[in-house]
Image 1 (cartoon, rainbow, N blue to C red):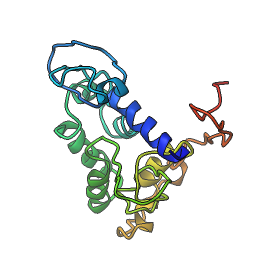
Image 2: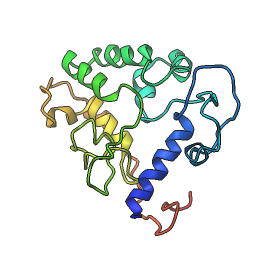
Image 3: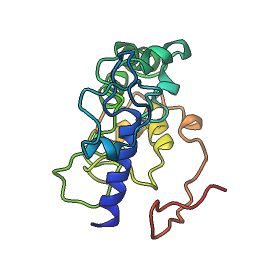
Image 4: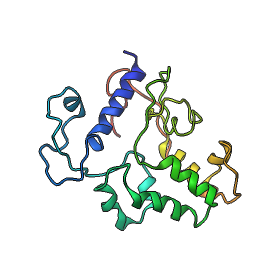
Length: 198
């Protein structure tokens, strides 16, 4: 299995710990069970999970949603969250056009990472499915080197959407399009493929 496919599987499995099999029910039979165990059928399908933090797409809740709404979003399935969906649009309309707001809402909701397994590629790319491959490939997911914060900030405050063909509203805020934190490109050849924290 190629390194990229392993990375994609690890990313998907890691995401499963946070959002996979989530339920808004109050019964917690098993907390933070490794996704690999669930995929292997170790636990019954009826197992209920409590979603602790919905954070598939970093910066989405933090940028768009009022802090008081975070708990509501964390207790809601990612694809049935009217709070986050409406706040993406209402926040963006404060400083961008209605078209930009509607486009961001369509791209960033639901707050889940999309992967297109039909793509014949070994390269993951954050928002790749939603952008038609403009962020690196149509596979989606998230590569280790993807600067997800800058990609998100560029779409919210910059001209990223205009480059994809959305009408430019001329209301960009360039000083807010980056967190100025670069990814160290030094990866290791063995799992988990990233260097130890410094």
